[in-house]
Figure 1 (tube, helix red, strand yellow):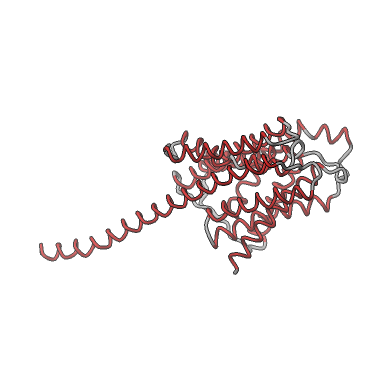
Figure 2 (cartoon, one colour):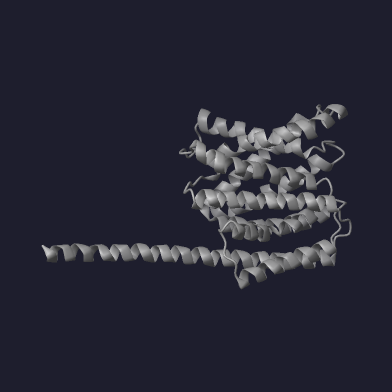
Length: 329
């Protein structure tokens, strides 16, 4: 029951954060169409809160062992890609509906697989190519069925997808090739300040002049602090789910979350108009994503079984080596 509650909490926080960001960025009540500034605020808030929780109150532990070479070659690229993902993904909400943005996010496994294959982390196979083709076809059909399509919003959203795929690739390189395992709290502790710096530079040149000219510095601070707090709570919910289940469960819960967001957005936002072609294409894409998750699960299980068999073989050989030594003596 505790595990199911954590999963439900993750789906609720993740869905709520998507709608919260959409409302802050595109509603007339807030009048805050600055995705860079909002994302920068999230990263600064996470950085400060992580420092307070880990170093001041010491409620959470941060895994140490981070040297300068690892930080510059791994954490900085991860932070830059994370900043790119949040910036472009939030900007897309200014141009396209929440439902359509979630449909475009279904192409994420395709980007991760292709970039992983280019980096030597994935192996091309006929089965994977078929799965990637099904996902891509479903997203194309869903896009074809979109009534009020904005290609600017599509470009921003796909840029965010590529940024997230690169972040995941860098994370996998950090774990597999450099052997450094960090829990999500440690990742936030190291990555959030780096992402904040990466966002601060473009914000100075792109959005700060607009905010100065529009005089929108008198934004409601309570709303933005609550928005940042929800983002931090979402990251902690990911930590809770992974610690009690696995990373695959997060991906499956993300599929459920996407359906919840698509259906709720049609009820909450007037600019969301779902068509039969929309839902058909998204259904095809989600079927491909489910096949991809199943493939990854079988791969992880086979790797665990191979490792277990290898360890048991070593244990069986040790008594044989001892007995042979005694015979020689």
